[in-house]
Length: 496
Image 1: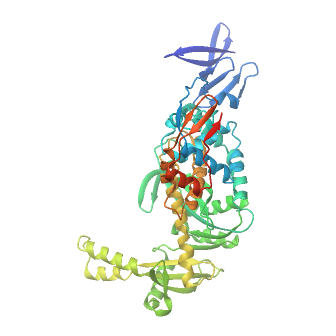
Image 2: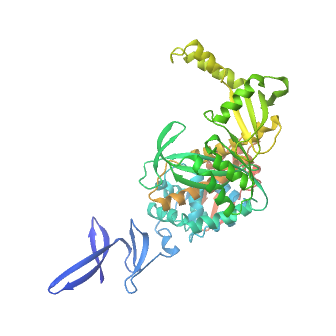
Image 3: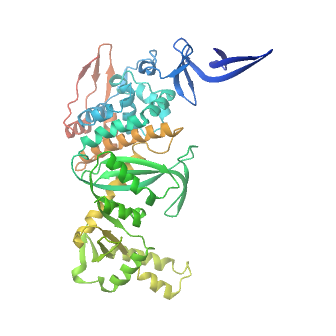
């Protein structure tokens, strides 16, 4: 057995050859090792294994050391760099309390890990541009050993996507935010990640009547803080109702003590509710219009709902809500809240009348449909006051905001990955980026800034690089205001 080398288009490749002799006939078996990265150290790369080592003497495969993943020493130094955005972001991350959780991922090159995390937050671009960003940013001084070439990023995502890395992060993160110390109210929802990546998680989905090729991503958020606390994913053709039990079980296995789960209608089923009852987890959930219990509750309550004692105010909107006791699962008591939203009713009635002729509706059809406009039904395992149910349920908007952050600002879509391993690593990195972005958003909620305007303003502050020091440019008024918001002092000179 020996290693043979050949060269194609200037690139050297290796293969493992084994010869077998049967009488006068000799046959050879080939095992492709792939591209040669370092012949002396025995480091190769192929699609099956990624970057790996091979020892011919012992016939064993391994992983290259973290030092191999360092950047090339021949990168040309730039003398003026973007400073303010990366300096403020890195300072915020270091003070956020998340550092021990991020380090607990266990990746060998922390400079690459933090540089990629900052890149996901600051630049909503594909990973092939990460090295260009790093070269022109103060990130190259903060994280000098980061290797952000495209090939190394794929290996990096594959490494942090390992189950051990995910458990290492979440084990520490959940303790930091207090999700394992006491009971936590949680919000659960899912979103689609449309893609055409050829791996088992991509499937055709029919979600609320929308057909797409996607992966289904499930997030769990903490009601008290709005921070995401956990994520799961499943093939796009798996419906939400099938995912709740396993999501709750994984949270329990991770030490999350759940007191109340707030869910959308897609998670409603008798089995899911029974599981929540048995786990002693209270819930609030919306009913779909096509369920028997929805139709019965509306038929019973609609004639008597418009009553002075049922009117409630929520965010300057007035809603009639009738609370009635009901039974969703045999042997367990629940409470239904049948609501009539006046603003929504008015809006839906105008839309219905405007399209009635085009839809060829008879006057009787219009009359029948008008009676159903603006109606909703929420059910709860806990007895709440009628004016309490909407504030509790509408905290679900927090998880919608989390998905918005992930998709628009944390680089979660479009998916630019190959294989489930790199997909998991990408999801972990976007999860951490979303957490940090949400923390920034909470900090800026009473100011004139949001995270994007913050970073755009800070990016305009530059720094000059000298052999033994870095000198920052003067912080203009907006940059100074941003530093003050986070109680950060901008240095004039930074020794190298």
